[in-house]
Length: 161
Image 1: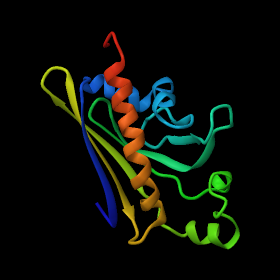
Image 2 (image 1 turned 90 degrees about the vertical axis):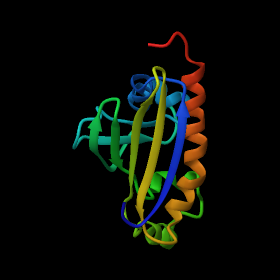
Image 3 (image 1 turned 90 degrees about the horizontal axis):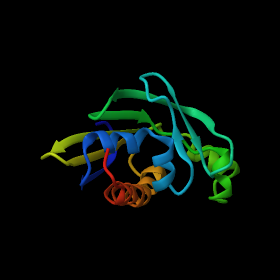
Image 4 (image 1 turned 60 degrees about the vertical axis):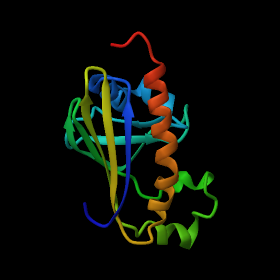
């Protein structure tokens, strides 16, 4: 890891296959993100497009898949501050937005480890932030909510596949 980072670890009562599906399937993603979330074909080098709200267009903000090993590891670059996000954060305009956009692009990585026959240890590392990063402050609040919802969705889902 380089720079500052945020790490979140969770034990999920679901198989690595189920967790992988939840991380990569648009239907699942929409269940635990507060919006439509990211989409991609999840192959190395592919774009990761982002939708800020269901029904709105997806945007290519330069995110790319870095690693994709089904049921084991998924890694991609994270978006920077984008003008389309200003409606949620009115302070991200003009000079402030330009300043925030100078922060380095970070990376999010999900590692999946089987635990027994039907559980997965999910370790999410979001790293590459500069010290004092505003994006780091934001994802430190956002990831626990998102990943807690992911766990809830998976553990409530039945029958298991």
